[in-house]
Image 1 (spheres, protein in one colour):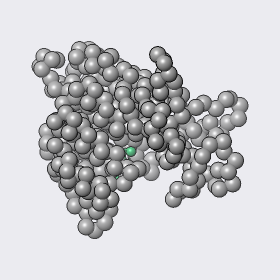
Image 2: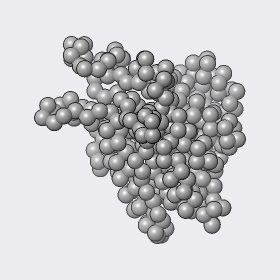
Image 3: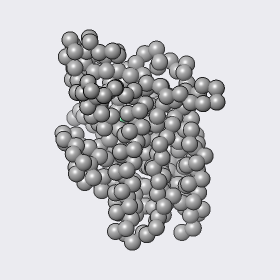
Image 4: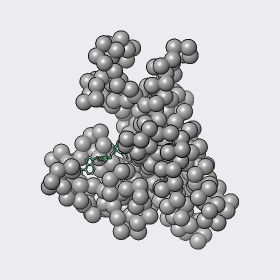
Length: 309
Ligand code: ADP
Ligand code: MG
């Protein structure tokens, strides 16, 4: 199919695409896990132009733990750690994709992973109130000695950082150009490196951006046709994790908002995915989907996941 006739599909991969709950997360495990989504994406690239975004929670957590365990080298700020995870995960996705494309006989497909900045507003109300737990778990005494704010979570004390809303993706024009040429683009890893504008330049800030909200923003700015969020459940449920649980095959924006207000979608997990899916479906009048990593292809064909819009 001619590249300019192909619709654009954005796949936002959750952290479990690389490390599943309960796994140690060795590099071998991460490559093995990645083969599942990446194999489907390689086949979909025949019919769609593809953008891939991804989370970085476990990877950034491991880098923080490494920093905490070593006094010999200077500590790096969060923005640098996010950049590091974009590099490491971008490499892993890119090399997996390369092998899968070769296996399918799709030769010479151009692909690229980009270091991505995402602009946030320095007046975002979240800067006054860090709420997003990251990195290792500490005892109360350890937490008191840390140079940054911590919060008591069910697991123990953890560092908390601010999580401002994404305003715009700095590389959106470059991404659009690459997509027009049918490159597969891997970008906005970990929600992007958060930056604020300072005159004509950008300055990194110690924060993390939600990857689903950043992906929705990118999907709008680049003009994506299908926005798909892949995670470790088959889609959206009401009364999740209770005997009354019901799976939803379809969800309108109005219903989604009502269920969000009724507390069905927690802020730390399903909440931002719902918000991202609704935001995209409303802004573009196109389809968004929340589905499992194993069912990406079926969900694109409307046979799995929760379909919005
Ligand atoms: P990701 O790494 O893909 O962003 P998250 O853990 O942040 O994954 O979000 C997915 C999780 O959301 C699921 O594993 C599930 O436990 C949880 N969840 C919370 N509420 C719901 C709901 N109403 N329907 C489905 N899953 C839900
Ligand atoms: Mg998440």
